[in-house]
Length: 359
Image (cartoon, rainbow, N blue to C red; front, top):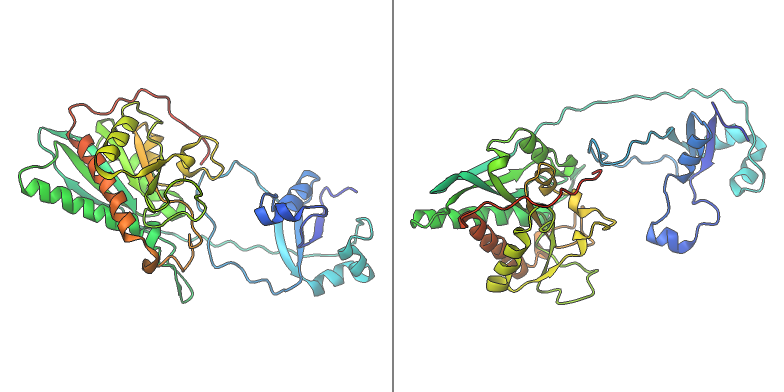
């Protein structure tokens, strides 16, 4: 059947023959029908929603400018069952059941689209601690302080994402400041960078790395903390009360992983899990937090992470679910690693090829 230049009407159901295990695992293409319509030249897609009126999601879409490969699907609209019956007439029941082949229904349909552009503005927070004899060089410690905010009256607390990183950043700043007050401050300067706009598409770190306050060629590394207060319920190996996911320590500098491993062995004894460091990681964690914008500029990075739990990006990500002992241990690991990098004689070598990809 020719659909070029036509509007395609479909039901809001899974494609025929889709296995239940694919549905449960969410490994199917949720846009399969739209993609098929596009391939055949459809100008729009109408989707019959049986529980219409369809309630629009309160969440705005991800605003990454380069998160997905360019793909423009045809405009899709949810319509009521009543409207579907009007269009299909006596064929409605059979068409919905899939018992008749597709056919053309000559109807006059007016589609109206409105677009609203919102201007969003926010601010990174920078704390600077000047070093001693190597003060012109810099170590960045980062975490994002934004979360999802509110939806109507529902609060998204973000205790782990990224309250755990933000409070760790504050504690690290306090510890280094106390050392400096005692006359034992770091040789390199340290930037405590609290990014905003991470949840909107790494905006804060993108802006900083495109307009750096301190030269990136003098920045030895970025240690980024994003979710270190919980345990991963899907982690089935090792001691889940004593681990941290390490991402990116082997991507740009051959120095960095050795320092990270040595500091952990000497001071904290956490299990290092490199699951999300795998280049084939389907969740692409390496590209999904603020460290990536430093990495894309060639600055070596480590990303500290606890995994994905059931409260991720939900209102139930609350402080009472934080494992404070584990949070403290992970934050101490960041401190000892930062202390070593802030005081060693040489900046980290940048001797490994950058890992690039579509965010």
